[in-house]
Length: 255
Image 1 (cartoon, rainbow, N blue to C red):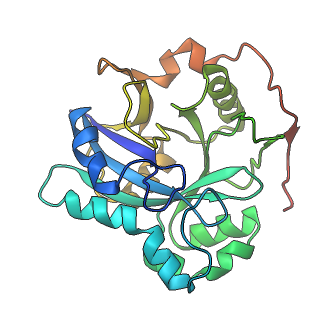
Image 2 (image 1 turned 120 degrees about the vertical axis):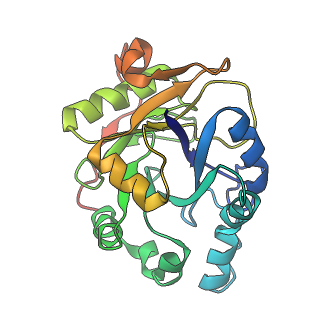
Image 3 (image 1 turned 45 degrees about the horizontal axis):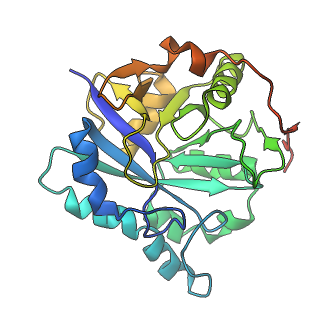
């Protein structure tokens, strides 16, 4: 038996681009065959809808509310809800797994950290830091920023990206020799391809997930609208690039 997990998900409680309440994802994802999800809202330096003029703890309470609502809705169901963060620097974003709400409350200083400082702090908390959609191109982006020594792994399949963008990320990750992840980057219900991580054993907590990723025991997969699960490694269009990036690629390592 295998278990599929959504690893990149936004709710309307904390992400400005989110369109779905946390609790409403539960039946939707269960129907598609997922065993759990990780809520990864945009943090305050990203596309957040959390008010800026509140005390830090109140802001974190709001930030975690989509996760809290989903966690409550999943009680008694065979579905695991886990907490994560999508953290932005200079429009390069990182998925943080293994930290929790209390850690955020006690670490207001993260807003001033460099990439490497955040990586160290997350490691000290027992978590990991994955660069999300590294070769993503959008009309609001002027460049691509890569920080290969400031992350533990790469999101090689992001269902919201065009195939060549994912393929560039896959090739980049292979070159670095880092662990791979996959996710839908879902903001609303749709009937298009999705993504996730497939495991032989059930994932009990986000700490278990982080450990499994570093052990490379999960398989990055794509979930087609008809329910077919395909390992990303078997999808040529998602793993072999056919064009170079159109945006300049920068390496802001020391920042």
